Image (cartoon, rainbow, N blue to C red; front, side, top):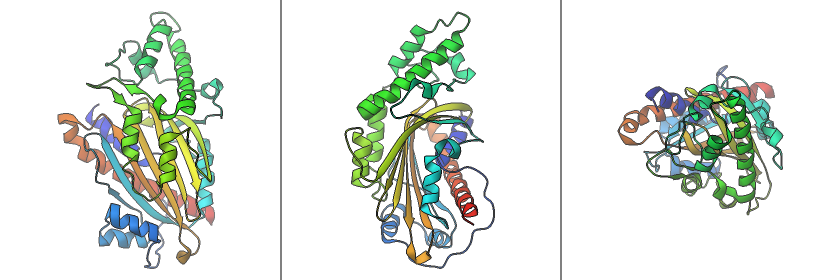
Length: 352
């Protein structure tokens, strides 16, 4: 992965699943008050904001910081928060309409997957030409497109790469494999996620995901949600809805195919949205974003929007990775800052 690819990927990490668009308008000042107790505890134990950052947050400005306690060779973890003067239900409504929320700009296409999944759900999925060209010579342990070994072997054996119409065959095969992947996940959970063999040792997506989620802070990722994300589909989660969707995103230098599992849980004191990346054709093994929407009666209408985004990649290790990881993290933080401001602006403008 080149330096520029990682630099651009860092921005994408931070803005995953947040509303896009440029910031508009000035932020309105808020009274200097205490934060809701769960949020206060989380900041004290896990984030450790400076006094100036805390003042900015209380005034209504977005605040972001990088989180510690991660494996620097493969993980980026970003915290962000902002006050939004709108109803939490307004944001949840947008998330449920994921095809409209993640449309335009970097999002080339976003499609919600049926329950149960149907092969037709993937009818619009076509690999970028660069990926089709790479797949002509791909081998296990040597492929720019992230695919499990079994999927890669299927593509190699099913497609007549030296014949006219090979690209159409490859797209049809990839659509079927994507469909089978989500069906497998719906039936067998994390155990059915990919095993990548494009490095010196195999990378088990399920193992990487478990390692990430077991170290999430208590805010948002309560025990019942942790259990659900780890043991799905053999676990239930009260007050929740969920769905899968796929998309093609202009991500870094390459259009990237992604498949996500999104879970929305309504609680007595908050709403939690978890976005779990099941597959990405480039850059990432897996990612998890926890968004927590906490009302604050002392400020009348509105809510605290809190996001913790953790992503695991194979591009931050080794000599080259050490040289650029600082830049990747800084730009991930910058991307989160812009996304938080855009989310606030969009929701507050609509609420007026």
